[in-house]
Length: 169
Image (cartoon, rainbow, N blue to C red; front, side, top):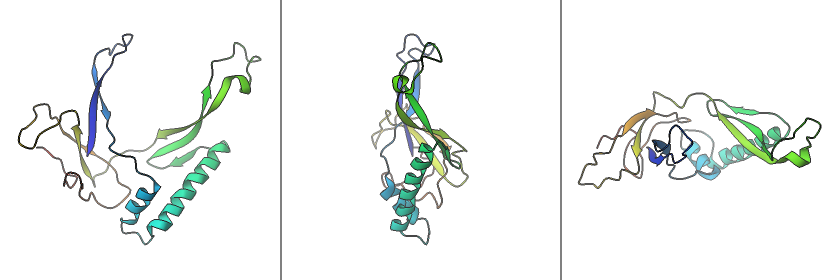
């Protein structure tokens, strides 16, 4: 399930001042161990350890290639590239120096492909619209979305007992 929370734009200089917008509320961050375990559960002949080794090498090699000035594309996920942390700008081309104006590097990820699939239904639900089990919340405006897994099926959500289908409580 994809949970969202609402925030209000408080930038007085914005045309969207005091309007409400959704943000995805991630429940947890999955590390390489958990990702490897998840991938191993998708009918693969590879063990969690083998998968974790491959993923660890992929991370190391991606960083190495980025630092060699290359971009790295993971199809239907992202293109990873290096960005610069810059301190101001030089008045003229001759006044520019790396030491004076570049203060560091940052990792950039630009999304590619679609996060869609006919294989997996998901629910989008507001987390600020908390419901008790005995009453319905009039602000509940759940919607259906589609997501793409790396493989396998939707399974069952251990927190809610849902199987990925739309929950229209």
